Length: 371
View 1 (cartoon, one colour):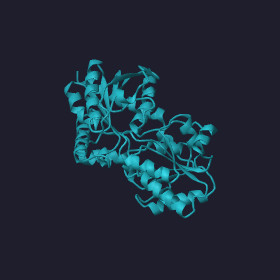
View 2: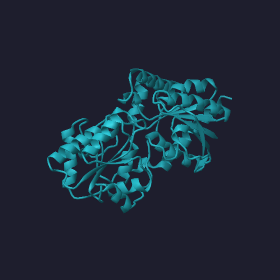
View 3: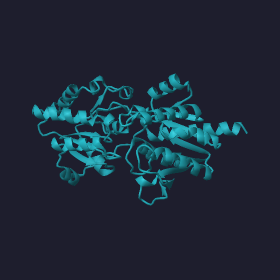
View 4: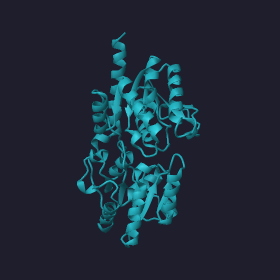
């Protein structure tokens, strides 16, 4: 069976939740005997790869402009999938899903994965939000099969679009690899067990500005001692928010690593005191899953996707409450360095890959039964 994937900027080593999802999932799908091609956006990759871990990589031009790149790239990807005689095209995220009806008109079978209601993200204006809502509707109503990464999204699909047959398949996380990169820590000017970690894209809905304000408050009260705040990540598009965030971070002695993966990130996860995610909007954050896999104490906002993960109540703080966030961080600083054991069973990528393959087989059987 030939699966063509679009809706991601690309794999491997491209920043973003959907990108990490695809990077982990599709080599495992290929291992299970499927022929998989991932359509990548040329502006995000320059590795020259044509294949990676059994997955074909097809690069197509797209303008690197926030408002247009996803829809233009998806249009071209669908045409490419048609020429490749794909059995199924798998479209990720609600923006690209705007073109699910187009793929169906071309006679293609479509699997659509919703990673969350992106129109709730603060970076989008009214016009973009309207198009994203339409994309969600097109994906929900027109795809042959729909995958959602959380029960919250499943409820939305049922109540808003009467789509009652969605497959709830969460994001996953790999087995943690514990690593010690002392040279990297020296470069950053940090020490093991003496830093708090955040890792995400620099966009408003992640509320990293709240985290910086909470840390600033603790510094003013002389509560952080020698504990530093490390933020791993960057922005896709440099804008006023990301520029301002970096400026505030540097003014307050916060360590910015930029976008990192591999040994550097593994070292941070191995030796952090805790992980903080103050977001106002999420689907099912892979960064949080990674922190949990390393048994880090976590401090997260009390939004529904975080609550769905069933963490202890002590892990949550009220969204936007900087004082409460500061108190949570202070409690971690004052406690002994420790780890927390979480139940990560349902976030196993191998199990997730089996579930996705079952969806593909179900989708193809529908076509064969109509012949």
